[in-house]
Every structure is written in structure tokens, then in C-alpha cells.
Image (cartoon, rainbow, N blue to C red):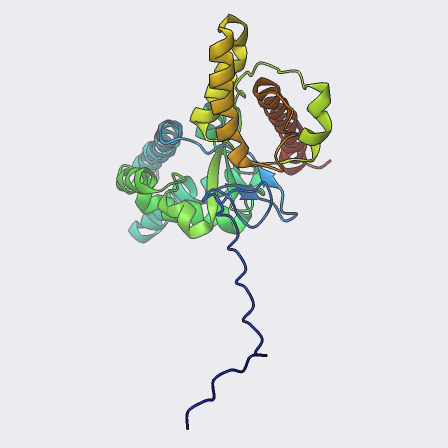
Length: 296
């Protein structure tokens, strides 16, 4: 049976709601938190820079030499003892096996657990091992890292660890993938940035605006434009300032007052980003001290 045609009083269909604006791929569901950020249990993004593959290789080489050095020193002492005291062959093999596990498993696990993610190589290179929630590693995680490290590091010259870290976005080795850990830079210097004064007429707007992360090229362009602004001609100031402001406003909501000049808007954005970055660095420093300072 065919449906009757709608009469003159049929209700028109509701208009479709517009789609929301696209979200940048670096954003997550939490405001100000990117998908690659460390997020604590309180949904606080932590700026913990990862240890690069060069530092990790140097740190691993130091631990590799120390581990084998201890093992060889124990072997020398063992053979000295065998030359003086006659012992059973099975007992001697058991001693060698225990010394092997002590040097390559128990000692690294104990050191990382007691120092909250530090080894001698990490200490020299300024690295620290944390779990994926940016908290200190547990004894179980240190045991998993050390256990996988025996074939991954000591018996294969670290080749599997180097290959895995090279193809992993966060430079994790096999032990990190299994244990759910991550190596961060414990000592690093923040890049110096020139302070920009907040325009008084835009202070209220900037303090309540939602500032998404700017692309590095755009942020560097704004910084260079403001630093060299007095040296530009009025035409260059107007044209370049308008172009940079139009690009920057794609990452700012709500827009500034229509009467604001482009260079003043860029100054407000730069000053507010500087203020929020300083607050975030201070918060992260307090969190780092709370996480990694041993309780007394």
C-alpha cells in the first residue's frame, strides 16, 4: 500500500545541525592535553620530555659495561677460589648461575627500585625511568625490565633494544613495552623566550580565551615579527601583522574585539601563552618534586 502524500499541514523536517569544527589531531578529550602527553591520575598534562635515542644508547652502554665488568670480576674471583679450594662441579655451576642472575637481574632491579628509576647510566646521562602514568616505577616493573634486558641487552649487544627504540615513537625498548614504562629526561633546560608585555586593553579577553597549541612555524613567525616589529615599515607592519593574526585566530576562541590592532592581538596571544607555559612549568616542577623526592 502506497503512503499518502503529505498534506498542506505536514511538519517540515528539522534542519540539520552543523557539524562541529574539526579538532586538531594533537588534541584529546581533555582541554590542553595532547595524545602524546603524559597524563597523571588527576588528568594533568605533564611536560616530561622523553630521552632521545642517543642518550638512551649512551646510558645503556654504561650499564652494559658495568654489568659485564661485575660479571667478569666475579668470574676471576671464582676461578681464583677454584684454584685453591676443590669444589663440586654442580655446586660451581650453581654459583656461576647465581652470580649471573645477580649481575644482570637482581642488581639492576634493586637499583632501579630503590632509586625510583635510576641506574648509573641514567644518572650520568640525566635520565629516569617512569611508568606510563608518569609515576615512579614499581619493583614489578623494574623486574620485568631487568628480565627482558638479559637477552635484549647483555646477550645480544643491545641490538634488539636499539632497533625497537629506533622504530618506536617514544623510544621504548622491549623491556619498556612489556613493563609499561618510559624513559624521560630528568635534567633539561627550558628554551629561553623573550617576554612580551600583555596589552592592557586585551588582558581580559586573553585570560578567558581558549588557546590551542600553535604550529611551531607560526609560533616562531609571530615571535620574530614582534621582535623586529619596530624595524618594519608601516606597510609591512600592517600586511604581515594581519596575515599572522588571521592564521593565529584559527587556534583561538573567541575572537578578539574587532577594534584591536593585529600586532596588539599577537602580543596578547604571545603574552598569554608565555604566562600559561610558566604556570605549567611551575606546576610540573612541583609534581616532579612530589613524585621523585623520597619521603622522610
